[in-house]
Amino acid sequence: MEKPLETPKPENGHKPLEKLWNRDYCIAMAGNFMLFFSFYLLTPLLPIYLDAQFGADKDMIGLVLSGYVVAALIVRPFSGFIVDSFNRKKVLMICFFFFFICFTGYVGAGTLLMFAIVRTIHGLPFGATTVANSTVAVDVLPSSRRNEGIGFYGLSNNLAMAIAPSAGIWVYGATGNFMLLFWISLAVALLGFWCSTAIRIPYRKPVEGKPHLSMDHFFLTRAWMLAVNILLFGLCWGVMANYVALYGKEQLGIVDGTGLFFALLSTGLFVSRLYGAKALRKGKLTENALEGAIISTVGYTLFALAPGIWAFYLSAILIGLGNGRMYPAFLNMFISVARHDQRGTANSSILTSWDVGMGLGILLGGILSQYLGYSAAFWFTAASQTAGTLLLLFFTRRFFLSRKLA
Image 1 (cartoon, rainbow, N blue to C red):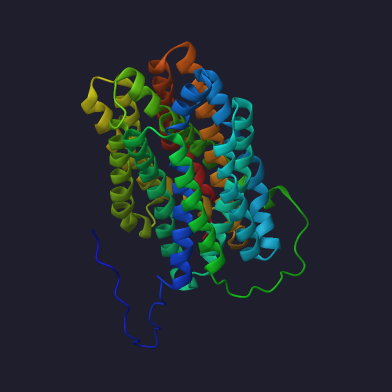
Image 2 (image 1 turned 30 degrees about the vertical axis):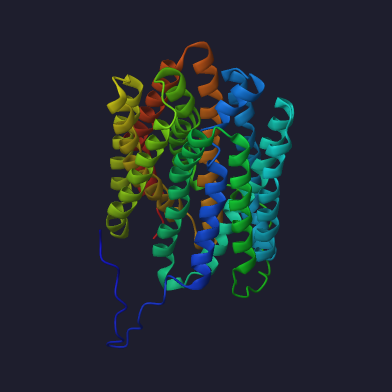
């Protein structure tokens, strides 16, 4: 682990580095962590809940769970434009409040249709809040530490997305109570909403003479091949994250053990992000992305082979290590092909592409596991990851280098 950078003394007219870990940046990171933690606490267990509570089959489960991704996908392209046009703190607070209040719908949903409606509606504030909170985090960062700060900010949601499923599975294994999980998510989301009210954002003058609406306000068209590539990787995550618990329970006879799966995944993500930070600072974006994609390909293939319990857990480490290298590299690649006034659009575009992939993964994973079995679903995941890696190796790297801005 690298030592933290020391603030240099003023010398030869150079200014010391501005403070990175300021109060408002830390609050923004905490809010982001709670946002993702509350949402992904339920992710691996909802297929089990829908099966136990409503008797839903696997393709219906995939259809119900993909609803939130569709909703997030619809709202995200507009979110960047909204946070640039209105008071960002107010937008963040409104979005976070509706995200928090939607958890009460899970408690009250008495039918499969009602649950599907609540889950789909929940995707709207989730998609908008992720964009608003990340934009606010950039606002409160000192300009000299912005690139570094954006990299650390990504750790908060990566850790939450990996740790929360483990915590949810542990709580369910200890209590067998789904309602308790819904209430925990509600409480954590409330803390996240409080963070949105406590953050202080510097005054921003309204932008005059803004250009007319164009496609680039909603999606970074210069990065279209990067978007296709990250979609393929998001598809793999959608299948794995949503069906690994059900697979572990039905095929391997484990419940608590899938919590260990996500704990190992979390460890891989965290270690990989820290290890790859130095290479990213040196500008080795395509190298980091390709190394991560290859490691993830090995992990997904090992998972699909399913030679035993040891492979089940080893694949979690490999997938975590790979995604921890690949995703931040792609985020920097999106930003590097965007103009300075398109950074919000770049952030929204990678999230949108990831959402499309995850939604397809959830939907196709449910259909394949229902009609062809889990083996087909996870081999499809390995094939998608392999296709994404080959696309990156032979086409996306050259595409990025030809469009990278100075």
